[in-house]
Image (cartoon, rainbow, N blue to C red; front, side, top):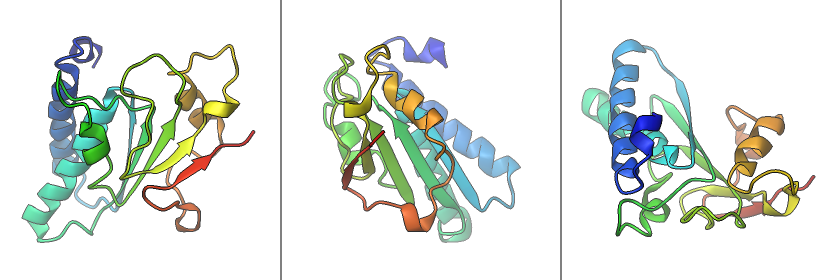
Length: 169
């Protein structure tokens, strides 16, 4: 993946292409899939979101419905700009196809287009509890992996789309 993510003008398009390919591969090999959890980190959010979108679209074409597979999308400090001009792309598109989408957000890092909440996701803002020694863009991944709440979010813990909650230590 790293060879496809280096060019900031092409990385988003490469990610979407790879995400669509992975969805096709999953559907061809997993004949009885019930649930899928896809995680995207930084520009990998393009691959993760495209994987979920492609999976849902292919299920509709194949089965006439997409509800057979529950798809959860987790985005960790997602890079949201698509190419040179797609400044609001991630906010419009990321999470739209998922049955549940969550974003772990850090608002004080220098990586462009990663510092805003996404409207199609439940947002968990982890900014205020970041240890000073951890780089801001890395913090959502570190927080998520240490949280003990990785994997599928139980229905009773799911936050509404567009909501913002603030993580506590």
